[in-house]
Amino acid sequence: MTTNDWLGVFFVLVAAVGMVSVYFMVFRPANKAAFESQRRMALDDEDPINMGEKDE
Image 1 (tube, one colour):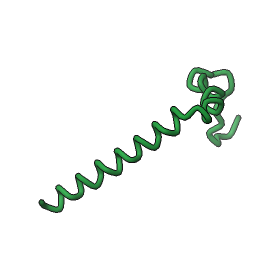
Image 2 (image 1 turned 45 degrees about the vertical axis):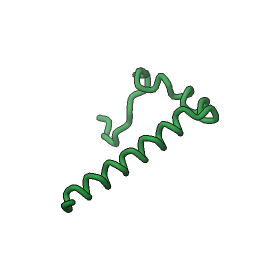
Image 3 (image 1 turned 90 degrees about the horizontal axis):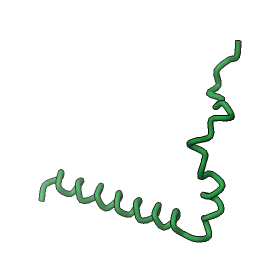
Image 4 (image 1 turned 90 degrees about the vertical axis):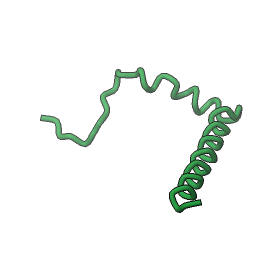
């Protein structure tokens, strides 16, 4: 196998481990309250996001 093949195998394995760990974190019942409290965050446009810009 070439170097590119080994790099591809490495990155696929890292991505798979990362996905499994994120799935475990998201679907774990102990973390439900933390995720439920932020479930409408993407739709909430009531509070402006402070990006460090100066108000004039």
